[in-house]
Image (cartoon, rainbow, N blue to C red; front, side, top):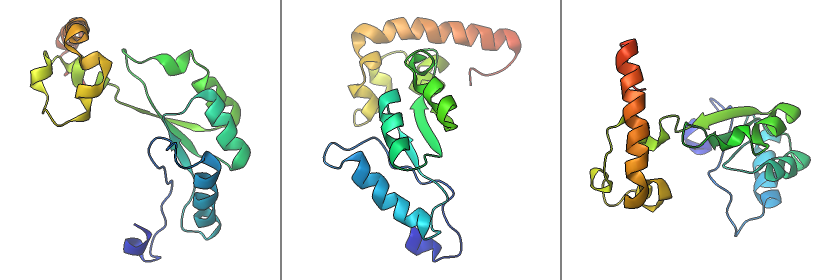
Length: 153
């Protein structure tokens, strides 16, 4: 990406996806921090981390943002220490999948509604035994949206 930008613009925040067990967080952040020092990146972001991983990352380099899932189905970050750690460290929270990866729109009612090749088939909430419970939640969101004259999104 930096080659494409050719020095005309730097990336405000660079955030690789989830942690890779083959590369230590220190290795990853040290490499990214070099680009910050060179003025090619504005800040470092990390994704899908625990509160302890946030603290570790912040002890290595300043972290600008952490990307974590937050929805009615995944409110964990409000109770597992991630948001409080981010607040303590002055790290921006970038919440993703507020619609529960599509389940809260009630557009997905069975595993067959998903393309067979996509990642959601591997998530427990999309398993046949769970999806019906989530469909009920999606239906409730649909009802609220209809009452308010808006879409579930």
